[in-house]
Length: 260
Image (tube, rainbow, N blue to C red; front, side, top):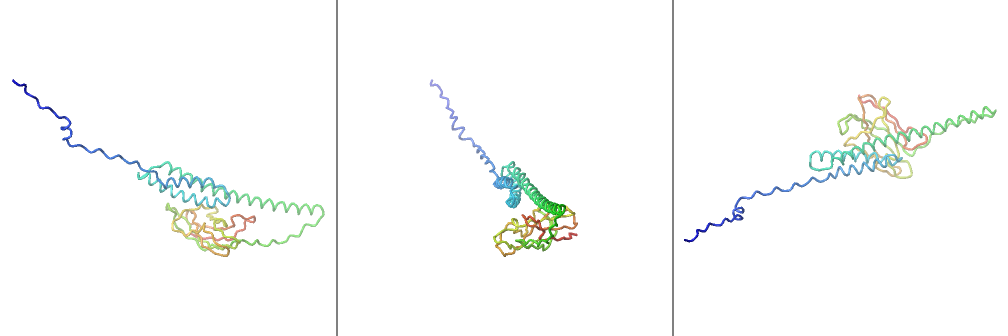
């Protein structure tokens, strides 16, 4: 008798015949948020230049732009469309620090100039007293003529609105004329301050305003500028404008507005 042959099992064919489950597609990692990176870079630049006189006017607005970009970048990372939460947070912190440093440094420089002018006045008075004590006639005081400013400015109006976070803010409109011999901007030429209840108000970020703060104008040209300030309540505000750098610290324009 011939030995009965057992059919051979083809394991490969059996495996191939079975339905195959497709492998899951690899998950693509989310890319870094470009806005978060841009906000961080602007924050570094703003902080590095925040203590430089005159230049730090531009640093303040660089910080504001960087802050907005950082906030948008943070929103992107929270939604999961982009990565880089740490970059966005670092950018936001740096830009806030830069804006605060600009305000603090400008207040410091202003106080130094005021102190220097006060010291000069005291020295002049002391010299006159010494001359009288020695029997000499004190020099006759000559009324000082008001110094001609290179800029003319008017405060046209103030309206109550809200900043980008919904907090109350007053929007002030200025018209200024460049009477100097070179092109310049409101930011470089003038320093506008808002006071409420005797306390200086911080600058606010309000969308839709016609800022023109950094726009340069030629000699003899006028321009309209709008700036916003944080306010608390509806008590009156006083707007004051001086030259950014001036030995006399003369007030070029001052006006009080009722917000009620």
